[in-house]
Amino acid sequence: MDIRFLGHACFELSEGDTRVLIDPFLTGNPKAAVEASELEPTHILLTHGHSDHYGDVVDIAKRTGAPALAIVELAGELGEQGVENVSDPNLGGTVEFDWGWVRLVPAWHTSTTPNGTVNTPAGLVVNLGGKVVYHLGDTCLFSDLKLVKERDPVDVALMCIGGHYTMDRHDAAIAAEWVGARTVVPCHYDTFPPIETDAQAFKQDVESRTGGSTTVEVLDPGGTLSV
Image (tube, rainbow, N blue to C red; front, side):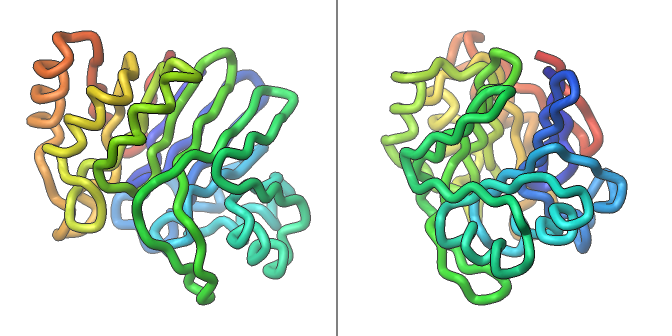
């Protein structure tokens, strides 16, 4: 499976003919590696409805026909916006696909869509190609981050580190130890001045705290990690 970082908190997970797009904030994203029109996802997942995650979801879903998945209130808005194929789990819910599954887990944050729909933020646990990828979404540090690995050992964690709107790199280093993923890819940093941080220092902190059991892969926008 390939994990391509598209900037900010947007990733594309690819395995065979499956291309799973997460949080497609591309238009207006100064760190975007591609334009929204260049992507042809087979599925789209959202962690929450803030504009820097919701992004181009409606346009991409309508253009490609890709099914979308989001927490129930957010899914309802997508349907109202004309997205025809939407899955609407709540926290703890799992949706099965022919390539694997997606489960929603808690994230501590706030969220209102650009259209005014209040929704509960989530993390996404994605099983694709036999690998488990945990996109933490936007979150602060909280102890339930420890629980995901109790059910599903995490191969790769996609983790916010920028601070100000989410946990900073210091809290994220603790989160990385708790999540226990083999690999962590930092995101949600350096897109805008309030969330500028030192990703290499985060890498050093995590690998020191975990004794090397967790490695950090710092990807530039457009970079790909194969797992």
